[in-house]
Image (cartoon, rainbow, N blue to C red; front, top):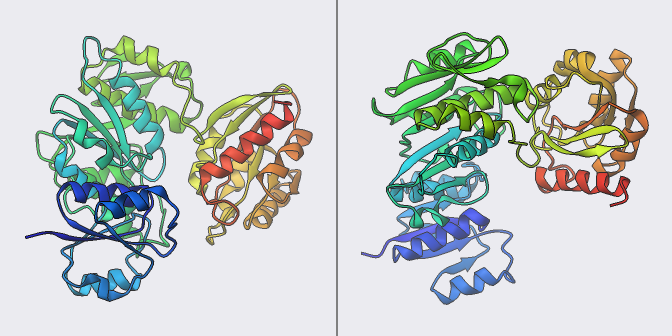
Amino acid sequence: MTKRVLVIGFARSGAAAAQMMLRQEAQVTVSDNNLDWTNPLVKQLEAKGVQFTTEQDATLLDQVDLVIKNPGIPHSIPILQAAEKLNIPIEVEVAEAQKYIQGNWVAVTGSNGKTTTTEMIAALLRTKPDDDTKVVVAGNIGVPVSEVVQDLTAHDTLITELSSFQLFDMPIVNPHFAVLTNIFSSHLNWHRDRAEYVETKMKITRQQTADDYFIVNWDNDEWMELAQTTQAQVVPYSRLNRIQTGAYMQDGWLYFRQEAIMPAAKLAVPGEHNIENALAAIAVARLNEVPATLIAQKLSHFTGVEHRLQYVTELAGRKVYNDSKATDIEATQKALSGFEQNVVLLAGGLDRGDDLSRLLPDFKAHVKALVTFGQTGPKLAKVAQDLGIPHQTTQDVVTAVPVALALSQQDDVILLSPAAASWDQYHTFEERGDRFMAAIRAQKGE
C-alpha cells in the first residue's frame, strides 16, 4: 500500500524529506504557511507528484501515515496536536534518513559547542593515514542527512550534529559514538521544562549498547550522573582533570588515557570551552585510531567554525572575533573566558527574559567597554553601568562596529558575542555575523 506522508515546513530539511519519501514511492504533501511558490524546487517536486499547500487544516491528516516536521516547529501548533490525537507518528527528516546509515556513525549534541566539536571530529578523522573512506558531516550543521546518506557505504563515517529539536522527534537514535558536550538551560520556550530538555538530549545514548561509546563532559556533577544511565562504554573528558580514563588536561597538556597529545596552548582557537571541544574530539579520534601526532598537527591549525568564536581579522591593531552563534548567556561567558586581553564586547538581541545580571562577574573580569543593540541592549547597558564600564547603545550590529573601534585601542579584542538570539533584528545568527564581518571589512576599506 502506498505510504501517505505530510511534510510540515519547506525549509531545507522539509525539501530533503519530500525528496527522500519520493524515493520510497510515498505520496507526499507539503504544507508551509509561508511557501514561496516561485521557488524552482516547488515546481520540480510538483512535476514529480508532490502536492503543496499553504493551509494547515486538520483535514490534511486524512489517511496520513506519517508526519515529518521541520525541527523548529513546536508541537503546540494545532495540526500537530491533531496528529497526536490521531496517533499519527511525528518525526523529523533525520529520523527517517538515519535508517539508511550503514557505516560508522558519530552523533554530537549539547547546549553549546556541538558545531565546533563536530567539525573538529571531522577534521581529525579525515587525517587517518592510508584511509580512502569518506567522512561526511550533516544534520543540524546545515546539510540534511537524507541528502548524503544514499551515497555512503558501510566503510564510510557520518558525523551528525543533532539539536534537541531533532532528537525530540527521533524515535530511534543509536550512533556508534555519541558525544554530549554539555547541558544548560536552553530552549525552555520550546520544551515544556528543563527535565524534558535534559531527557531529550540524553536520547542520543538511550539506545546505545555495550558495543558503543558515550563520550561525555565530566566537569559537571549532573552530567556525570546522567552518564550512569547509559548502556554504552562511557568515555569521559575533563578540562579540570577530574578523571584520567578518557581525555583530560593536566599541567597545560591534553592527554588521552595517559598519552600526551599536545599542549593546550597550541590550540588555534581560544577559550576554555574550545579546550573542552578539543578533548571530546581527541577522544573520538583516538578511539578511531587517529595517531596523536596527526591530532596535534590538525588541532594546531583548526581556526574554528564560522560565527563560533571565529577569528576574523586584525583591524588597526585590534584582533576581531565573530561569535554570533553565542545566542545564550553561557556561550558569551565561555567566549569572554578565552581572552586575557581587554575586550570591547558587542552584544544584544532577542529578549527571552534571561537574567543578564549573571554576566556581571564576566564583564568585570574581561570587558573594557560594551556596545549594545537589539531588545536586550538596555538590560546589558545596565549591567555595564553597575560596574562602571563604558558603554554605548547603537541601532544594530553594523552601527556598533565603528563605536567599538572608537572605544578600543591597539592590542584590544573586538568581540561580537551577543548573549541573545538574533530574531529581533535578523533572520538567523549567520546573517547577524555576516553583517558584522561586512562592517569590519568596510572599516578596513575592503
